Image (cartoon, rainbow, N blue to C red; front, side, top):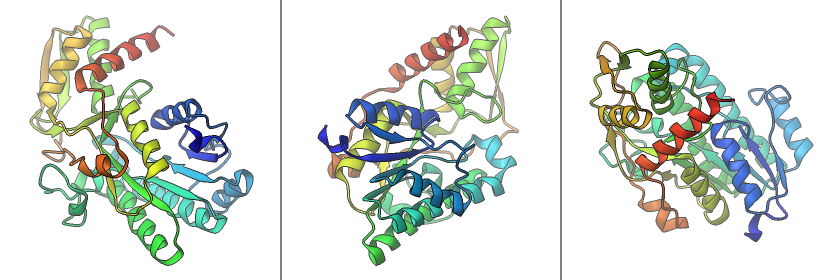
Length: 313
């Protein structure tokens, strides 16, 4: 608990879904000096503004969560934006962190960095064995560049940076915008809106055959903070729960939890994305003792409950 007490910590993206939970947990761990840069004040795509952020805050630790993110649809519509913004934010945050002499830099990658045909479960050593799945490759490659930078900076500058690869996250305060959200919040919203509108059918992208692994946001935060406290190597580390579920099974569980009893229609003209995704999670447990605690049913129940409450204002 004493690790954070006298640390100045910058959490980029700290007002977002994952970041807001990280800030809460930091406060609970005794951190009294947390700075969350807002995009209106610091455009992290611009090097001069990144430099100004470091001068203004003089942090000991940086947790870089800020990212341009979205589901398959958003990635297909904005591949250049997803590549450029994520690359520039990460590269410049790490470079200015090095120049500013920060004690530790925590970079958050993505499961989208893995090759399209990675054997399941995905092991960190397989990261370079092929090109990512095309629908989100620009985003995945921009994030993977931070791993290269992290390892190069440790080698040349002895810079203490770590690189974590969380699986798909979900939970309270997720993005429920149907145009940009990931699969769980989109399905929760579709089911609840169908109930409210007395509709008898919802439409879901793809075939329902792909499998995915989902990590509840509070578990992800615990993994990130344990790594920040205990892990000091540049080898990438997966953060997951080690359980995969088909999209078809996921939809049925969400329908059951929300009370939607209508028809579930599938649109196979829309992309499925990568057919299977599940992480090997042994390195995280070995290196810094992380193991997820919230299973998919409990996590979905909490997420549905939170979203219903948010609709009540």
